[in-house]
Length: 296
Image (tube, rainbow, N blue to C red; front, side, top):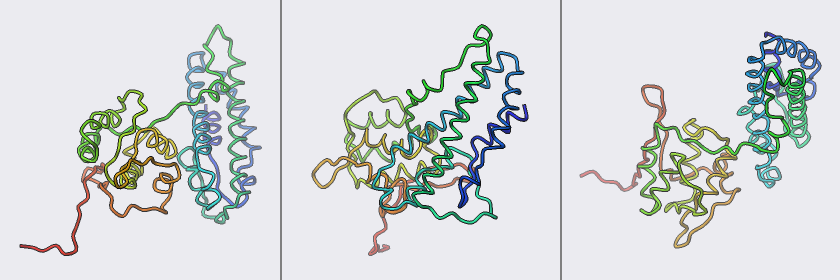
């Protein structure tokens, strides 16, 4: 199974360099594909099914990447192609290699299109590999996996998952920013037990404070199960904020500037993520310090 292992690693690995096409040349991958196919088809039927499920999981990663790509706002690309490239979050989906011997790439529109083309080619190779295994496996010996076309038409709707060890502390910190009638719904959202509702929970604070709180939790890996684009969509679906005496809805651009970039840092954060002695991360409320504070 050594060739199969090498194949699934290589199909997910991308080299960042000035010449994307040359750095990610696929001739060796195509040759490795044939040896990897022999590896899988030599396995017992039950193990073939297990490897198909493993391949489908890898294929889903490619689909998640394209979902993220399609949700990035067009104006972000128009404002800064480098910023747009960074928001692709390549290292969240694939194994990214930046060799020290390689020159630092200059990001242009053509450069972005080149890496997207290479990713699409790798996805096609993986798709064909999955189909080859399915077609070579008798249906009376192993149940065929879900076809890649079906996966494409039915992408998984990933939502943010707050790690259980912080939900109670996070709720205690956030609840007073919401009216009493909304607090139970807030807890349900943090525990992923909320029912479908069109109601937006109003955050009684600056809009960027709630967005910054979620960004800090995501960056500390205390929110899992989604990427930043999916986190932004989740916030849009569930929250609004109070602006003076009016309720104001978040916009995708507003949230993207805070969560996916460093262009709009929150000046009055409501929480800090701190590393504990155990090595785990926890959350604490920030303190307001008055400049004219006097000791008595």
